[in-house]
Image (tube, rainbow, N blue to C red; front, side, top):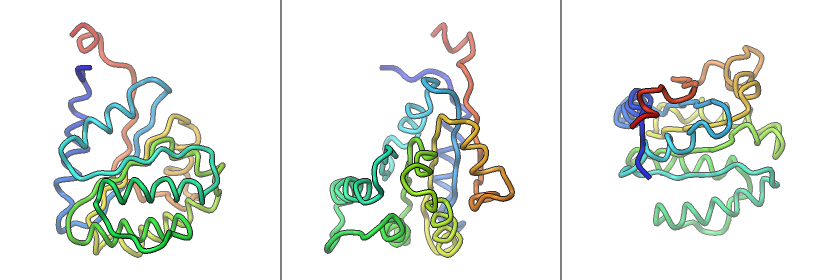
Length: 180
């Protein structure tokens, strides 16, 4: 299926990825209603670059980590001895891996971490703050619960407040783009 519109958003995401070298890791947040094209935009933006895509379903953290470990082994051709104990171990591995070359990691439906493990947002804050300078990781957090995503990243009382380099709020395609 052909990709239409969203050229400025696509360009922003790509520019963050290609600008990672020497600037440290970054966070991009993408919000919008369901079925508006968030996932398609993100996947289109990482075509041809090293990336991982993780869908955050409402499962236990250990189940998610197990699924994502397999994805890491396949996509990064990485040797992982044993298993990650938790999400923090997995995230630290990704930061370590990105020390050598840029890596984009997409967490789709990021707000679902609230149901998986409500302390996840504090863990992301801790790891990001400690590791962002030495690494080249582009974290892309996409979510369709606008109120939750807004609270997670713009409420001064929340752990990830002020961490996003860019917050992209997707709306419907323009009439011009819909007529292509």
